[in-house]
Image 1 (cartoon, rainbow, N blue to C red):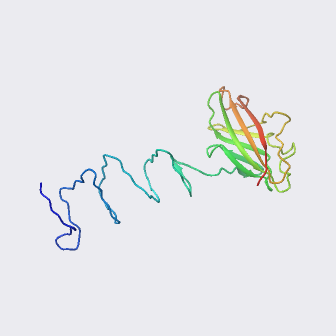
Image 2: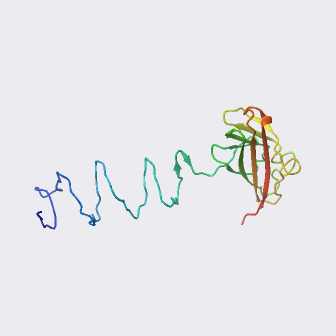
Length: 221
């Protein structure tokens, strides 16, 4: 084996890089180092382990795997078409729609937006299933949002399972006919809806039972 000992390699014209026509082999234990960059038009094949540090951003069009987890400090995380986001209930004409295609936890501010009907949509109707949806309600500044039987949460529920036209029902509660919210200004009430489907026909309202509970009043700050 012959050796050529030089400090630098440059092409014959003295202006560019040399071409390794038959490739190059890096002996075991040796490294490539420097402050420059590597530009490659073809494929890279790595038989061992690729180790890298101080990565600011990674753009991937394929699948990213991680040994211990992925931390995201800003922006959204898109995973197989789903995006992390705060699920705000869709409000129109006193109807609050909780679309379970977006998630199962929703928020709604009662300031000037009282809720007359809670509509839960796009949940799967599989036999003998029980689906839960959580709603965080922020009380208004006067403590008067949805505290009476006429406007209470739980009286009027619309269920729209996937592939089925919607139908109305009244939620079952532990006592009374509604879930009474806190009367303290700016409190947050955590409301849990549970939907049981008995598997006897997705389009029949009698085959569904909706349960609703309140998990307490929480003060801000």
